[in-house]
Length: 471
Image (cartoon, rainbow, N blue to C red; front, side, top):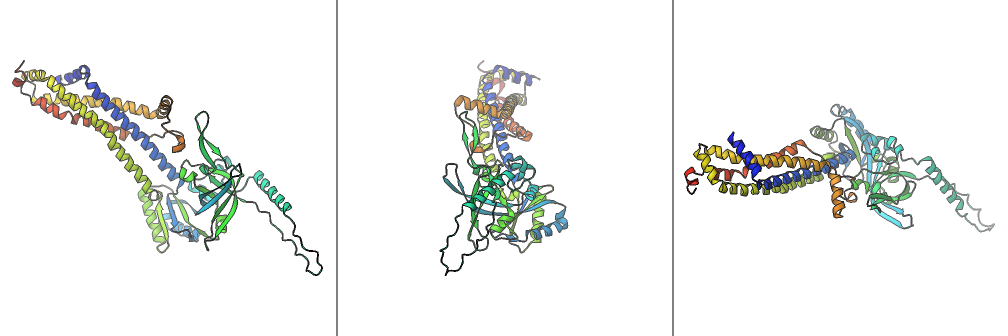
């Protein structure tokens, strides 16, 4: 009982110990906040990537694609092992293209894009498509068809262009054959497309300091997309009309992707019944089960030049880089708690030197070496528990109010800590895991006790006669 009383008395009367508590508290709070923010970013990125990509992707290794995608999907769905595990499949044709567009001031803008041919209804069954479209109608029933008013507008433009076309003049010479009959011209309505949000806009802060999207490409505007023919690799191009924006929250997709009709892109590229990928959605995605499904699909097409992988395999380098970065950051930040441990070592050594007489009296009254050792170890444990507890409370509070804290810091310092135009998130994402909080607390308490061992052994080793010799 006397051990607990002495530990509590030292904690209340030794104000220098509060420096150790504050060090542990700040270290624990920092680790919790950084881990929560890093986990929030990584989980949001994982969720967005998984939402945009199918569970399993069967893709060609080249731009030529592969033949008969429906036949391959039928083979997959007839397999007894696969048919009960697959929910939906959809074929896509992906290629690079050059986009040309005129700004409202008439200046021409050219940039490379990634052109994706899809069937909207089938692609929506895979997920990660219609929910990212900005028009409410397309979110319910995605289609590349031009709305009636937009279609009527382009129809009128085509009619006026035909009326303005100059008639061919032929010399009135009776000896020459009569002029040929006029070739009938068919009015062509351009195809619709979904354009990535960052292709059609740029982010800029307004007078109030808020970051907003400023659009230079609006629904109804025309773009010219130039790509290559699949057979002869000759340039092919056509005009498309923007009917909607694709806004996923990932700049890699929103800043590069343009979706068009699969059937029309196959016709434009002279690639009938050929695609570059088949996307597979599973009824329940489990990493181990997905790998078995990949292995089974590979067995079905042993001689096909196909690459089959899960979405995690395709994004493996990015996900691994995030894990490594998070681990290194944790090691570096844990040194803050280690600094608090050295403070505990210094303060405890000072206490042992000051309390030599008290330790001698305790031992002369019957206190054992183990009892003295437990007093100082218990004192270190108490400092660690109090510091870790306060640090956990502070860290969780900061994490839950991280966006308010960021705005306050930005207001005080005049510098934005989190710029949405850079990260493309409206708010700082966070995710608090109980296991992470427990590990941080256990580590902080363990360091506090560890750095108490040396002073505790020194105190326990004091001989009572030598400690009281000069008293």
